[in-house]
Amino acid sequence: MLSKIPFEMKSLGKDDLEKEIIRVGIIAELDAINLYEQLAAMTDNSLLKRVLLDIAKEEKVHVGEFQELLLMLDKEQSSSFEEGKEEVSALGGLDSPKKK
Image (cartoon, rainbow, N blue to C red; front, side, top):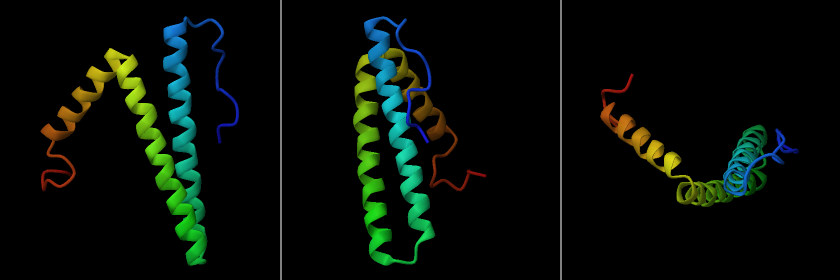
């Protein structure tokens, strides 16, 4: 689990620093989602399970917030994101019988 920034960021310029802060935030949120979903899978307590999954869902919103910021600040990331969406779509997407 992420409890410390995984690399030294002092040498980065302001623009790069802000993008890296966002990326570390995304990593932390994804880590939290993974943790809460794993914990939910481990319990038979339905209330605890619902609470953990609800918290995981909130963390997914946080990922979306960070992602939107990153796409606003990093035009290369933005175009790469769109390119990735197009590649998945060209392969048939998730609901297509083409997937294997």
